[in-house]
Length: 225
Ligand code: 2DT
Ligand code: MG
Image 1: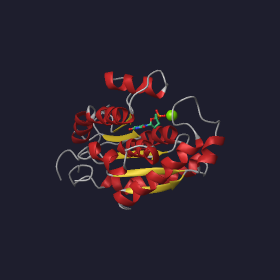
Image 2: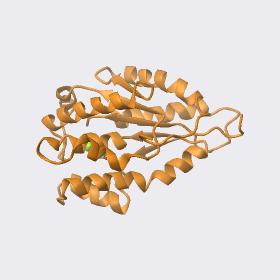
Image 3: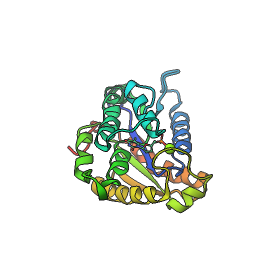
Image 4: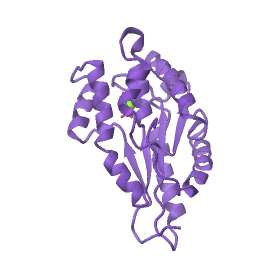
């Protein structure tokens, strides 16, 4: 075995209010405690959270303004900005994984496709068009889709003020996610019942993550390659 196993790339996807942020934080903590033993090197973090969109970059600031409806952008243009926001972070993702750090991302390319393609009934944003700029990004080893009915998600304190936080949008987004899950396949896309209480959701996630954490000998692949 090489001296340094690579980190694992895990993504948590789901509708708004499906519990992603809570579960990302819990999973990072859990991986961190599970890997903090005699063999790990002092204070080096073994797991870090990432969040997409990353609203802190120049591109991320444009995305943030769009989501808050402080700006309007053509649907194709905003789609490409979301994708560019992943590409600008791709070298960091690769470097973290190579250094042995596991990544737990709150949303990724799949949200990019789902939220844009749900607009397609009246636009030219086809599924294939939305997928194209995501091809070649570092591929997650495992995506956990936190599945919750939009009407249940909405009851959880209601949606906020941002774009897309509407029940009919979320219903269409969920349908696109389902198609993405079929394309990715059951070995890398797992649906978690996010209607359960958060401890049970956390345990279901952990049970799926543990075997993946041990499987660090295959190289990182690229989306749809
Ligand atoms: P948060 O509420 O998680 O900050 O997401 N979105 C997200 C897209 O339309 N395309 C993308 O590529 C990504 C990552 C989902 C903000 C909103 O942005 C949507 C909800
Ligand atoms: Mg939101």
